[in-house]
Image 1: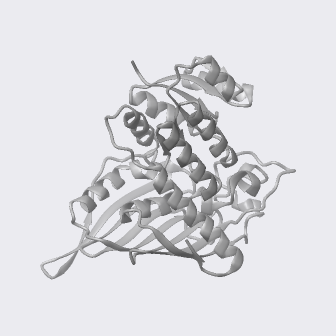
Image 2: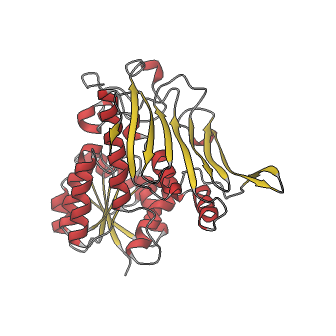
Length: 360
């Protein structure tokens, strides 16, 4: 029998989730969204037979559901994940895992008590470039990564004004919490070491300037709030002696959008990168995967050839969730890692607010 899954939320990421679930052989049985028109439209678009406006009603009506995916504003990640886990369902949740580490700890404990899988859509781990780089790491080619630089920077990429993205009470923050993918990917390559301290600064120079709006996101809300940062820079130390710097922005005076992790290992360095021609438009992007070694006394730079993946692992990540449930693949991420990540994000916001390093 195929795994039966329901999607909670009619947002744009539903397309990737639905494709990935079906590619892995799962059956999508329902879609829930508080907006009935949005639910009906998304269900029709993705060929999903049933719609609901209430998650509790959906879970009661369809006890055969094995798992749910959560694609809603950040504020509702933890409540909906907890609701599904307590009902005995596996959960695949969009990033960020939660609004903060406290919520994430609750989710982790509930998943453990329910003996259910809890995973997050850290889709950049599922990119072909990341699989290739992990092969080199696991084979010992790179050695121990000493330092890492994580970037997701945009020039004009604010995802709408006054909507949930720019409302701190709904999102938890701006690009620091929204674009945490590269911080996660860098940690993944480094072996997810235990963080020791974080020092960070946030900036809000352009957050209300509508000329910095990106080509995607949600419609502007005239009466909504815009009270989050437009950029954040920081530095993390780890109890292992490793370090990471990070730079994230929706709106900043950068040349163009860059999504990258660069690292320096004891045997080799490396780069996984996507450069955009136009901010936010994957079709304008160029990908790179490189390895930097020293052979026979000479520096050697290698370009690693992989199959192009314009969706940046979003489909493959959803496939991994289904295969993890079914026991045919290992999970690409764990609740322990998500909790460590959220501790870093919390610490970065606290450091920015106090102007001091924060012990983690």
